Image 1 (tube, rainbow, N blue to C red):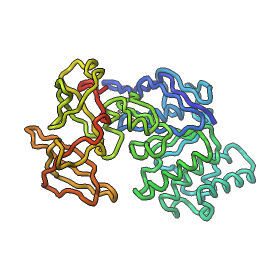
Image 2: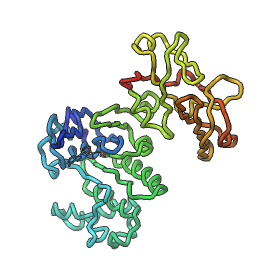
Image 3: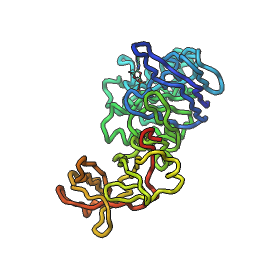
Image 4: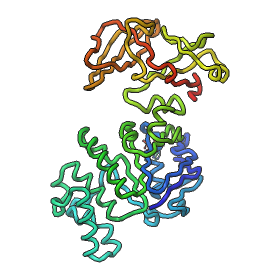
Length: 357
Ligand code: ADP
């Protein structure tokens, strides 16, 4: 077990112009923590993970594992185990051989390898499949073998790069819960890369959000959701996405398509513009027949069991689309005109219109 730290760590790829895939990353991960790196494609997640694994040079700064500087240590000397998206199983070996291979290379006695493989197989429900070859397994079973191979090595740190991306949606949900439970049981520091914000929110103790190689915010899923540091994080975390709109500033507050949102004097004095970006989560809007609000023409209703999400467009010259959560038993119909209003005005999120901060 070990803690992990990125200290101003950068990776620059040559080219015209050069790409700073990871830009002076500062991040500390505690011993036993499950940290998720999330961000859109190309944001530098895989590069950050590969830097930790020793598969990518560190052009600036340093990386520590267990308090030890490993910036120039080859992968073998880092005491990590990586689970790849592709699983990278050996097709000619059985499940047991695949899982025990790294221990065989370390010349660990056969009976000890068998004991460790059997134990990992029990944890992962793989005992009946130990003599099978990977081609005779389902996608979910292969994924578990890849996990098993990492577990038997008893590393200080697990690194996982989109390990669920080859599974179908239902299995992905099941497996993410299993991985989170397993991590808790093993208590091994884990860094997990995904582009899926739902996966990040449900699995991570903390989630680090990256954009263009820059760390935007690292915090618990709850804090990222309730107090996003900037408009990018606000828009990226949450499904469906937060409504992010430009409002104009007036003496009585911010005006947004028929809504007036009161602003505190602190907010007013820190803004030096006449507009503001306002973030409103779909669950902080509701439909009303009595209160003033935003007039919308419904163009889509997404029913999700208990709730439904109504997508509606304003009738302004430049129409804006809003998403409103409603009770699925009484959704409006497509084409209907509705009025949406704020449920809790002080739960709106305010960002600078140009910097997004
Ligand atoms: P993510 O995992 O978030 O999708 P990556 O870490 O794979 O992002 O990539 C970050 C940036 O670095 C992207 O712009 C990508 O094109 C670039 N990049 C990644 N690997 C290489 C490479 N080997 N050579 C050149 N550019 C690369």
